[in-house]
Image (cartoon, rainbow, N blue to C red; front, side, top):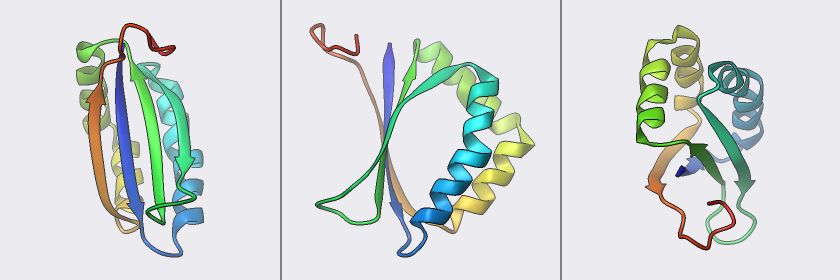
Length: 105
């Protein structure tokens, strides 16, 4: 398993709009693709404000590459990104591998 950890900085006052778009437009596509799973979505309470932290689980790097291909070819996903681009001020993403003792292994 590999995990994609994303931290998104959302524009002030736009958190609700982003989350609604994410839930109603992106998540149905994620379920349709059946390539990866959402481990969790969190909204920061302390520290940096207006941040969303998400973790996605992929079977392997080939599965991650498949997701990138699907995402780039699907016009519905392109439309979703056009809508949220104005809401997201920045994003930090990294791929992480679980340690041998991780419960997510």
